[in-house]
Image (cartoon, rainbow, N blue to C red; front, side, top):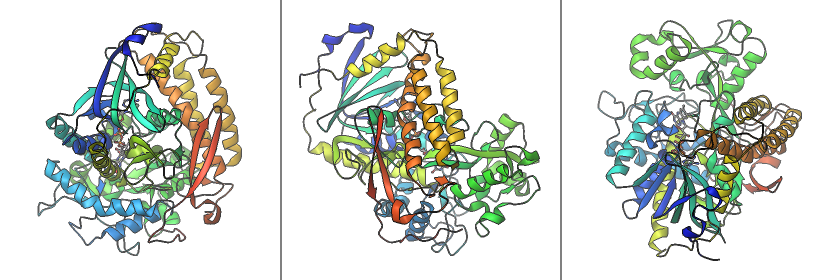
Length: 594
Ligand SMILES: Cc1cc2nc3c(=O)[nH]c(=O)nc-3n(C[C@H](O)[C@H](O)[C@H](O)COP(=O)(O)OP(=O)(O)OC[C@H]3O[C@@H](n4cnc5c(N)ncnc54)[C@H](O)[C@@H]3O)c2cc1C
């Protein structure tokens, strides 16, 4: 391998390489996962955080309802109960060793946030306030909903994210705001850094590092109706695939039951946690039919399927594609104190005053259970099973450790991102204590990234990026949404191939370097094509219904054949699969009823 020489490619091919930056640790993503890892590693090492949006605009800041921990501040709770709920919620696909770590360490992580100064809502006695959330129960599911979600009104993510940002600034973490990661440099099983685009100033920057962490978040933007921020385009998944690494369990996509009708903007589960009802056109609380005990607080996969069934069978409001989330009986005081953001969003986006009227809602693409396969120390696995890439870590929504299995419980994601971000930070510190030298940077380190930028900037075709992106989202929603079947999935796979072909013939209007969103949107769309194929192919292969993956042609869970994780690689035009067993320790799979 010859060494990288920035001078040698300076301004060649018309794309300037502006600088080579060196940091012990380079983190991509300033959400809870990325910044919690940065807090941990910056106590000892030089840490940089890149984010394609300004750090505090990361999607974590949009999280509303809460972060789970069995603090037992207001009623009895135990980590074993939290573990049982998470395992059952995952439809037994979650790895129980990882889940056990998460639920045991949860109280520590939440109290650390408190000590950092996070402004949680409080009980009368001054403890962190907790509320009910779907699928979280008392006494191994035998009791009713439990107060487990720690919250700051309905702006929990905002409070947590700003707290971390302040600690990072205090720890002198070096931020690169509005830097867009383009490619990961992995050679011979060793991660050596990455290449990024400076969104504001233009130009390619090479980041040379001993350790890289991805906390790049989710990909809800591949669906038409989604709760996710525009930035959630799954870039990290694509960069990993392009480095020859697999993705795990990509067929498991969570649809949140309550998105605002038409926009998909989230109405937090806190609305139901505080006592909100779901009603259909006849005014029935239809959850009685689907989950007679847990009602609106059944897990998300079940509630979303129930809403979609009501809509499909003509009981949507006025026969339309939505139902109602009714908060009126909670009263103005409770709504304005505990759910102010929901009140504001319903008013701004639908002109509905939820103190006086029910909110029109429909299920919305929300969360990715699958992602980059990692071990319990967040080391990315080359084979998806046991062999780590030296120096490459992933945590948060882009990773699959797998604590959520087939379906995530609400409030377990802020927990996962913070907790595994923290674990990743600690693991990186251990790794760096033993790694004195920077790995060699290959001479072609920046070539792929430069070629991609050059290709887009000189694209002279006829297809519009926006139009293809819209078609991709529509097609994914129609063919790979809440209910799936073999026929629809096969048709979708063909349509995606056709769209990708058209993508190779795009036109670009803006050819400048600075603030060029035409360029970034085209690159993001290319990323989406990389992994949507894996979602669809994985969904087609998995001939069963489990968690959020619901096949109408295979309506039952099939533990004999499918109690296993999917691993998928992209090799040329082909998707290749492998499988690995689920780690089961305390709770054997059982029929899942609520
Ligand atoms: C509206 C909403 C409400 C939610 N509410 C809750 C809740 O109440 N409780 C709960 O547990 N979970 C909730 N979730 C889920 C939870 O918020 C997310 O799963 C979690 O915050 C993800 O954190 P993260 O750190 O992995 O990623 P994110 O917070 O999404 O951050 C991703 C980061 O990666 C960066 N990035 C991505 N690609 C690139 C690139 N190419 N180059 C540079 N930077 C890049 C982004 O700029 C960003 O900084 C909610 C989700 C949504 C959408």
